[in-house]
Length: 378
Image (cartoon, rainbow, N blue to C red; front, side, top):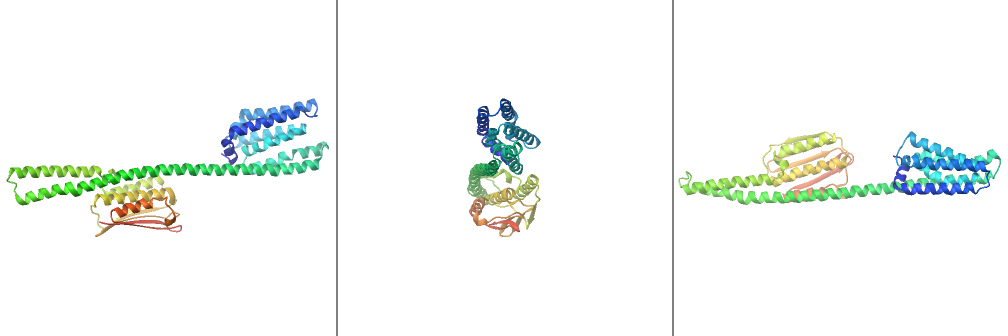
């Protein structure tokens, strides 16, 4: 859709009313002019042709059909205008209708050239017929051309700005909705993780202690009541572990390594950007809250790359050391200013890291891209 078509879509009904009002006013002016009956008939037929063409096809074309059809409609309208203005000079007031129509149907450069053409018609008619004051008409034509071009460009610019604002508002609303969804999801996950941790640290460990104490008192479990107590404790320990597993994020069901690897693989498949995954050190089981934070940080970092980085390559590293585990997500995109934006999810990532005693660092540069590093003692 051309810029002029965008203008028409925004104010389509008013453009149409304006066009037909100007056409009707000019038809009345032609009828009341001093031209001959034949000249009036030609002028009225031309004006009627312009109105009919716009009512039947022109308004649809102006609402967004680009290419040869819009140019053809514009050419016919210009020819009809030239016929009317050349036959009955008072019909040159149709310029008030034809100039906006030009900017609706043609690209900007062609529209400017066409405006210059149609505004010169009265002067050319004066020169050909030898009637009228061609010098005065030349001045009027020049003023009309400059005014028409300025008005058309100004309207297009206003509509462009309005469209940009509407787009920004839509993006902001979508971002707010996404943030609300993510916040709700994060809250649910945080509560589930908290409950899983509480059950693991209290009930599960309590049952384990009961089993250990009973077996220490009677290793062979010769006392039937002690044996029953151990069986019951083991059954409840299994239940508590099942509850902990159910409360943990489903994405972690296959383990942290596989979950992070799948996140990188899915990112590459969906975006077409190569996303490598590498592990260093000796992988080991980590507390559920730590695994949740690492997984969520991976998801958030890759989501930021998808939305903002325009990267050509992404690398994900999970590094195990004896006292900690480190997640590094690096891209070669456009970078950003970490201290100057709140739209990259960094505050949430940093807050989740702090909840498990970790630290988050961000390095970003337009030339080298962005590196997000999360280190958690574990």
